Amino acid sequence: MQSVLAAITGLLALVGPTVSAGSGILALLAKVVPSLGSASAVGKAIEVLTTIVPAGIKLAQDEYPIIKAIIADLRGNGATTKEQMDTLDAFDAQCDKVFDVALAKAETEDKEPQ
Amino acid sequence: MNHVLRLAIAAVVASTLAACTRDTQLFLEGAHAVSTAEVSGTAIVVATRAFGGAELLAASYLNLRRCTQGTRPLCREASATPVIKGAVYSGRIARDELKAQLRAVCAAEYAVGAECTKGIPVASYNTLVRATKTLEDAMAAYRAATNQ
Image 1: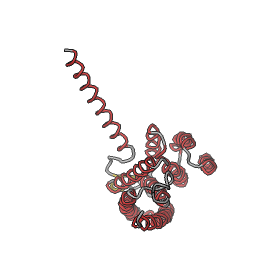
Image 2: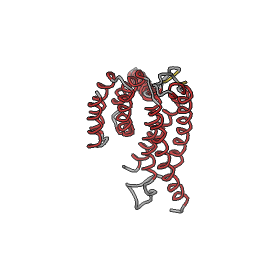
Image 3: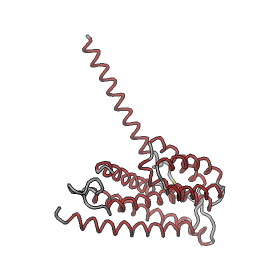
Image 4: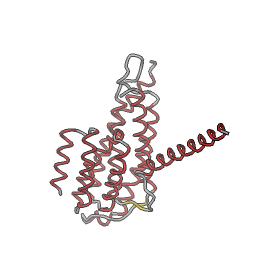
């Protein structure tokens, strides 16, 4: 099952989270997720899902139930590890920094007369 | 008589449409938020990473030039800045609360390198999910407004 997730990750890296790629990969992920048995496999599935979810603003509304079902399956799996939490902290810090720089630039520009 | 009948039909159609719109809205709002008392650590990881993705998208939007007559369509609306800022900041508070709660609840398991399956109270989780959705909706609206 890990190899299927690795293949999905590779595919995403190749085509990017476009609308059509996101749709197909969501369907595939929905089939794989119920069979995941380890925290590392769940972690990999989360990585794939969260690569697609930000592009979710472009997904059709009928794909929300698929995302919802995948999250429900992952939630049923339940387990987290300290490593996942540490990785998450690093990811969050990175996102916060990128956003703060962009926000400061935008706010400075917004104060200037047009 | 015909006039009265037409009015009655129009009233029924209008109320049906209103109900459909409300149902669709309720479904979408409920798509990610949950009504259970607790959520798992995995759900928190998923929601937190989704928020991070939305935060990065928002950053890429804020990095665009401010919209003026000459900069459309690749530009950002200045009015979006406070909306995005508010959603990101409220999401960060909820996210940090959730992670702190998860680490506290799972401290014993994490100390010995074990997996933790304990649940976390749902309040901050739903706040985080709502902040992510607010951010995504704002981004979609402002991107649509500038034809991106």
